[in-house]
Each structure stands twice: as structure tokens, then as C-alpha cells.
Amino acid sequence: MNQYEGMFLLDNQVVRADYKAAKTVVLDVLKKHGGQVVTARRWDERRLAYPIKGRLRATYILTHFEAGPDAITGIRHDAELDERILRYLFLAVEGVPPTEIELSAAEGDDFAPPPPPADDAVDREESVEGGLPTQDGDIPEEDSVGEDGPVNLDDEEDA
Amino acid sequence: MAMKSASKPRAPLVPMGKKRCDDPRIDYKDLTYITKFMTPQAQIQSRRRTSFCAQCQRQLKQAVKRARHVGLLPFVG
Image (cartoon, rainbow over all chains, first blue to last red; front, side, top):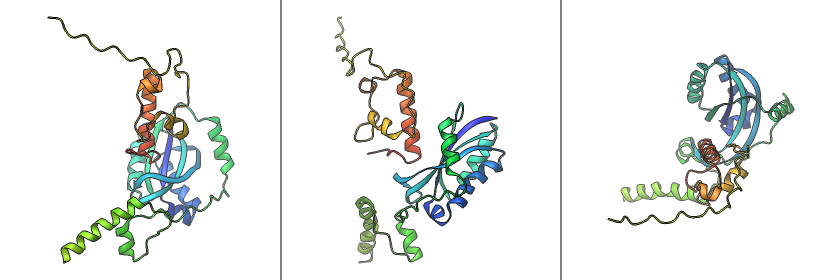
């Protein structure tokens, strides 16, 4: 069994609905392949440096777990297929830092994170198909410029 | 045939003996520390500027690439 550190980026829509269920998504993937979860906690919720799967924000779940060397392949495969997991990073580590154990224990079962802001959906095509108005709250200007581009091109083609 | 002599090596920006090699804080999650060794365009600074030894510079490089992968740092600033 090797020690691993796993960082998962979760879709904020899932986290907003139920944080506990969102955390279970990650834990289930690890346990399915025989991983023994040592710590798992919400590391942060922050704006992404670049859009990932059409999201501008994501919730980071930091885990430490023990798993066999063959299990990582299966865990990667499942994480890749799960749409709620935007991205993941696995690192082989020597041990679990004591601060991480304390922070994970402090989170507890009844931990309720502050609700993430609602400006994480930026994919224009999704919002158009779903008929939902785009959130104009904190969307950066560069995205709105990019969204206007294809619309103008379509108009010119129609004319 | 006399070859043109190479230009003199530039002196390091941080004086010798001031290396930060014993600093264990190079972690992809410690963004405040990592970004000190990056340019405003999110490029990794050279060893001449960071004053890291080769091993620590490689750790810095790996940490930056990991942070970029999980969306903590941009690929292009």
C-alpha cells in the first residue's frame, strides 16, 4: 500500500446542492478501488485561473489515502468519467502531515461550507440550450468578448 | 584561428551563499510562496533570479506545473 495525496476539483453546482453528497462522490471513487481514506476535507473554493469544463469556479477537496499501486489507474479512470469531478491530481507522498489530520478532523460530519457564489457557469452554449439567462455578476470581460464573437459572425453569415 | 571568447557569465542577482535550498515549502498549494518566483506573466523565473539550487528549481518547476494543472495558476498570465 502506498500513500497518496489526491486533490479533486468538484463542480460547484453539486457542492451547492449538498456538500456532504459532493464529498461522498470523491470518497466513493477512492473506496471503490480499495483505497483507505485517511483524511478528506474541503481545501478551498476559489476562482479558477482558466475555465475547466466551462466552469470558472470550483471546490477543492484535498484527500490523503492509502491504495495499492494498481488502484490508481482505476481511480483515475472513474474520476475521468465522473462529470462532477472537474479535475484531479494524485501525488505519491511519504506520509500524511499532522496538520492535515487535525484540519480534516476539525471539519467533522456536520460541516457546512459557505455556499459558493453563483457565477461558476460560463458556458454560453449550455445556458442558451437550457434557456437560462447568463449570470452577469462577476463574469470577466474577456469571456463576454469571446461570447459576442460567434454571435456577430452568425449575423454576418445570415445577412 | 582564434575563436571569439564567450561573454563573461553574468553574476547572480542574489549573492552566493544566500541560496534557499533548505527551504522545504515548495508545495503546489502554497501559492503565496510559489508566485514570488514567477513573473507577472506567470512564467517561472530563472535560477539566476530565484537563487535556487538545481534540485529546488526543479521542485519549483514541478510545483508550478501541478498548480497550473488544477487551475490554481494560469498557463499564460
